[in-house]
Length: 529
Image (cartoon, rainbow, N blue to C red; front, top):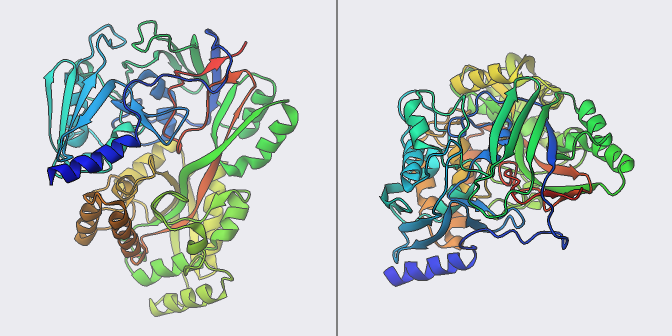
């Protein structure tokens, strides 16, 4: 048995790059040092704590100040490489991973980084103290024990072999935080940024800008190349475009397809502009609170599922650059292909049959005359357009939705307290991985179980697929679990977004990451100026 697991993990290891990330450079030119990379963001973070938050509008600002044990290779998003870990090794049974850490690493306040920081961070992630949120703790539920036998060694043991554990450690959210700072602060890292990363926090002027400067003591020799980075807070996309066209901004990343016309405008105005595209791993969705009427009736939920015209959503909301998808990352390694999804009830065209069945279900549920609901949404053009589209679609079957708009901070309070009746909201996965997708949104213990599903069978099915090492067998189990969730109609997935990244010609050694949460450190990016 031990030999079997050893062979499996050796095979897995053959697909993963071990050791230190050495920037090979996408350009043949010799990297230059210096310069300030200027970006923009249209929202601000609820706090600065990467352990407790779940919004990209926090991670884009602080990622460059931290490191994880592992990371996705910035120039090849299919590979996992070392970050704070310079190497790692599996035991013969595939349950224990021993990480050897880089020596001489310092926190930005001058304190020494050790394996105790890794132990403290991951222990806090898995079992957060009272009053501390840990949205991703379910991804580490398989861990049986963790140890720091010496300052430069960290050992992690899972209850059973977990094929997803390296991905969970490499995702952009799993950064290592300073034990000495967290122990001294009851609210964690909400108001302070102390990392080991390539850049150090400089200044945050709320409503205006966020700045970082080069870390001169960074443990990766020769990195970073930039002197610093700055993000301007620009709520309006038209102002974004104007700033980019006039070269006030070097880089625009994570642009959803709703702004495709702006992308075309920039392409026409800026000679040799770099245009990057990729899967955003963000899906638009209508969450229905199954603990509240009318959504406690599965017939009403199914009616909403059937009524939604996904192809129209892609055309109207994504300028044609969206992908049909279900609960797993669209066009990834685990979910159904879009061509097969297009044949499913709720996705198939034309809509006549689905709408007729939806109206019949509404009548059977006692709502032949229709009903009124309040639908929460974030404010902002993207969210407001999505909410309006959903409202119009629901109206076809007599569900009259009143849209209630909320600023970002208020929206987080509403969705985290589950006080909404239904909510139109964008969500994202960090990885093309079943544990990430199911563990984020679809399990009873998920931090963002926004449909309020409580079925214990979900946990049983999820645990079984998570512990299955054979890829073919696991895919079958994942398919069964997704089908089981769909049959409960907990939410209406509209589509999955593509994303654009735009850069001026002087920006070198950068590409869009896998999804929106990875490749945000910019340690290898340089400016040819």
